Length: 371
Image: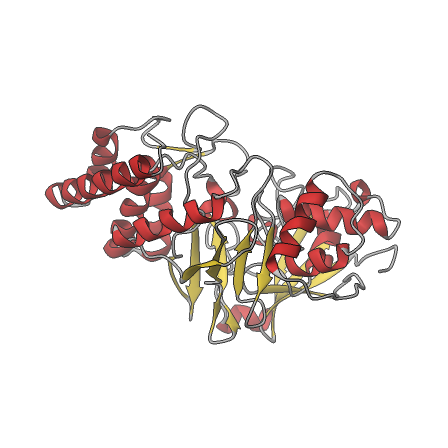
């Protein structure tokens, strides 16, 4: 990897040029759409990057001078840790690597459909590992130990987001598998599998999921990537990226999510699906419902809510849900029903849905001793 990365980048979707990124003298990363894209493309973020010939310049916060649409491409948590470790291994101080340089490292490996050229990837030697071997290596990395086969871990999970170690496996990396973090119980994968089974039974739209076998634990939870369809990438934006807010702090209310969904989709069915997701998070005690855990997909210029993901038991770190319900960090049934009314959803049907999900989640929590 070179010591100096790209000063400017092309943003592509598939083989089409969407536009270009370039650093301003202030260190912000400006963006401008390509003229051909303006004629037949779509806005990569209708909130902050409408189709226009202008040069868009972001604020410094919250994404270190990037627009959220591009910050969504960057690895977060585990993936960011792996990139920093790889930078250190090549003699580069991670603190001196800018946001646009990190996009250059991402290249075509990020989440969603956007990719970046020129790509400044790392050279690494691939060594195939089974899931148990990868899990053990991930644990050693979390313990700040030197790992002799670091390349295998980096190549498997260097573009992933979230706090838990992850790896892209099978079918050209179309499955995302999670490994326990240090704060997780050893059966975390089996618990998330049970949560996803319950969510599917509650009528939530969920991706294909399974429990990968292990010799060390009850199994590793994995989902098929929903940003890949028929072998092609699908453009995706998180709520964090759409409205330019950090997912690291409680920054949104579910009312805002309904407003985002209505703005992007205008579809009542999407609001109903979002209502089910809100109920499930509230009643299953998934307090880690931050702004990166809600996404929308754009296919053929039309937006729709992405399948539900990162559904598992979490008491969180802020003594309340990361996304509030009408300002309530510990929302009640009355709170979710009040929001359903504000969102224009039928009162009687919403109450039936909420009560059904509440009962299913109570059974789930009771079964696993989590109430």
